[in-house]
Amino acid sequence: MPYFLFAPFGTRPKWAEFTKETVKIRGKDTIVEILSEDLLWGKGLYQKLRFVLVREGESRFILFSTNLSLAPVDIVRLYFLRFRVENAFRELKQQIGTFSYHLRKIFHCPDL
Image (cartoon, rainbow, N blue to C red; front, side, top):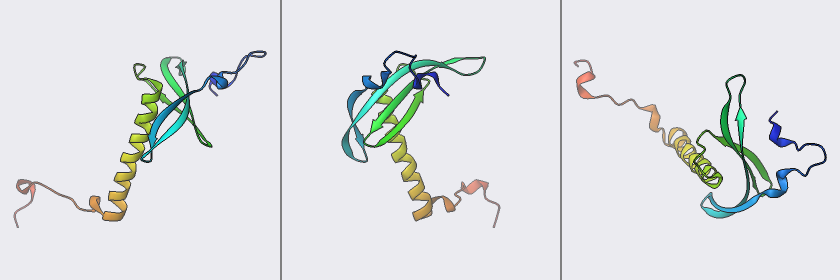
């Protein structure tokens, strides 16, 4: 379990230090609360990761990135953009049947 989820005894947890940001989610500008922390992660060979805790309405989730130059709000924006791309591919695959055909260059096909 990651250490950042718990505060030392007698101290106030950082949950109260969320910042509010506006992010486009499902085509609408939505206010999300973001808390970011850079931590070492791993076993033996540690790597520094940026963990981003997000509260969006009743939803709560944790994102992380190895790119420490990205701002926490940019990590959240990229996550929601990726989600839209994956939904588009799923739609192409399941509804339209785009990936059920195999296209090849003519010179790779056997003689008919």
